Length: 85
Image (tube, rainbow, N blue to C red):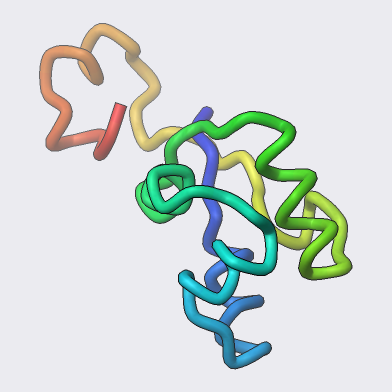
């Protein structure tokens, strides 16, 4: 499973916010926002800061999605099939 922040992206669009606006409102760094933009793991402290700034719950900004591959070894050998690992 991997993390997806598509919900956060949609929430920012709905609220007419840019990523830099969220960085400032939540007090997070540009690097943390970069990780979110690339669907990488961030700490719970970052997620809490975002939820506090946006007055929302965790499931409003992220979700776990199933990887496309069923075979982990195949995924490791050919990352183009499975996307980011």
